[in-house]
Length: 124
Image (cartoon, rainbow, N blue to C red; front, top):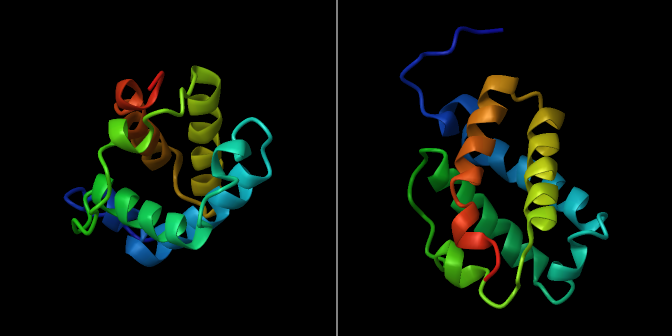
């Protein structure tokens, strides 16, 4: 394993947008197979959703800002997401990152970042 420069962003450590796109594809495979959360995506253009999510995660992890979507609160308005839904999604993201051999410290950083968005996502 090569040495990781401590000044690298999490986006760079993970492998940039191509790696994030692969994680997002696998993440949505997990999401769509999970009856806890797949109902929220039944009327969603998943190709568009995957591209959008890849750009959002890219930006969230320190990559270039190509995200032009809604704020988290607006994107989740009317969904009334509960902690069980949030936790399922966070767990699937963690699993997807682990599937692509992202080290646990980096996975923990990603999940910590996702957790910081919880107030803008739940109960909307």
